[in-house]
Amino acid sequence: MVAPHPTAFHRLDQNARKLLPVLISAVLALAAILPVGLPQWGTLAPPFLLIGVFYWSIVRPDLLPPTAAFLLGLFQDLLTGMPIGSGALIMVITQWTMRGQQRYLINRPFFLMWAAFGPVVMIAGVLDWLIYALLTFHPAPVDGALVRMGLGFVLFPVVAWLILIPAHRTLPPG
Image 1 (cartoon, rainbow, N blue to C red):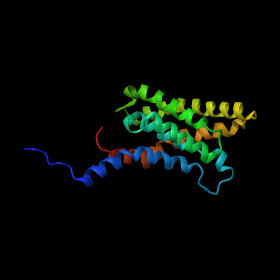
Image 2 (image 1 turned 120 degrees about the vertical axis):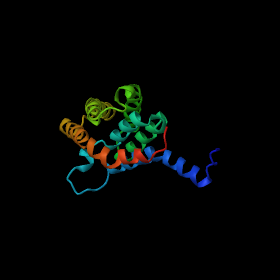
Image 3 (image 1 turned 90 degrees about the vertical axis):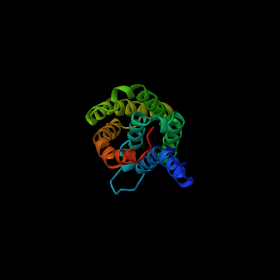
Image 4 (image 1 turned 135 degrees about the vertical axis):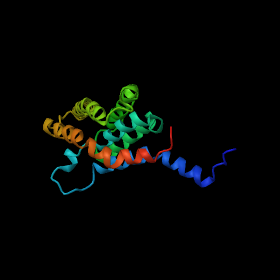
């Protein structure tokens, strides 16, 4: 029996689903600037985009290439007022590093992925702080960077279970 040819609507649906990791990551970048009514939210917002890039680089690296990670990082820099290129550099480094670690983390218990995110969020936070200090000649408060790192680590499972894992289940096999 010959499989029927997919309809144009089916192909459109499959291609749109392939854009989901990039679109969700862009929404996560926007979440960092949403006015939530908390004092200093802009300076203490968790690294939501880092969570998205980390997750997609492990589970579906084919749908989040380095170019997308770079553009998402630039998008975040423009949104947050960080030095242009700093977020892009961090996202690309994260994406390349996690693609190399994919074989150790894919199809393993979620706890291992979360544990692997700990050092990633710490290194990214330190890099973010250093780049900002070097490019602006004015170091940002260390306590703000520590809060962002801590919030990122604590919120990783929440973002993954509520947004990333359900979206991953809707993707076509890859």
